[in-house]
Amino acid sequence: MNHTMHRPPIVPLSDANLAMATHLLSQGKLVGVPTETVYGLAADATNGSAVAGIFAAKGRPSFNPLICHVADREMAERLVIFSDLAVLLADAFWPGPLTLVLPKRADCPVHELASADLDTLAVRVPTGPMQQLAAMLDKPIAAPSANLSGGISATSAAAVAEDLGDKVSMIIDHGAPSVGIESTIVAVKYGALFLLRPGGLALDKIEKVAGRSVQSVGQDISVKAPGMLSSHYAPDMPVRLNVSNVHADEALLSFGPNKVAGSDRALLTINLSPSGSLAEAAQALFSAMRTLNKSGATTLAVVPIPQTGLGLAINDRLRRAAAPKDMADG
Image (cartoon, rainbow, N blue to C red; front, side):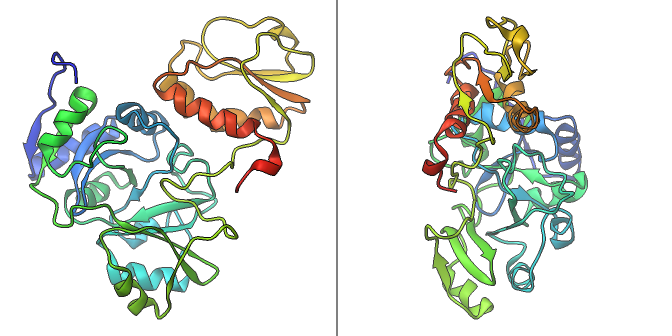
């Protein structure tokens, strides 16, 4: 970490500090927040630029879907559709270290970047400050572990500060988490349970309540969670990457202030970020691709995106979009 980077304020848990954290989240800022599992890097899950800030702060190499933390099942039901089995598990283990992956509601307010534009969403009710903040904000909070991508998860406020520095506006210190490892992630689909990530809740406890076994995920079912991305982003038309010249009747996905040759021939052009901000581009990517997909163009032409920072994630998604459809795995 750069030794000139300012450390964010580390504050104890109090009503006043929770109110300040709620205000920061409402302003699109990032806050380090403890849960019973690990410390989370929290942002308003309905704010696309705030969610993009999570990826930028962590240096997260892919647009993995993020877990949305909610205050209670009532709040979760605004986001996802619960089956009877999902209700059974939620009522037994929430608040606690169980994340459920469930179908998104059509009117789900969570930004598409937080859900990786999938038709499912990972939700859980944590204990402690994160639950309190979700209730005070009255919105879901997207929060992966508060550490640099690929590093060791943070289980103290000091570790969050050491990893992320002034990328976060505040860190709430509530001591060491009681669980200390990430939540167990289970998808509920077709009346069955699928383990997507082992974690802080033992499987035998889940199986006892559910009255059925938790299955490992096979290749024959499409279930998505953090760390389980598939080629899910391809538009209907072929995709040309790193173009230097635009053909007639192509749609153009542009980036930055410079124009590419032949751009005036494009049927429709969307610039992910005229100023060249990768965070802005990340936030805009999925909706831009969907809009261009409806343009009637023969091909989607994409200008080069810098292979740095969030550009790694953007290029990863674009490569998946350009892959032959028979190579897609989801």
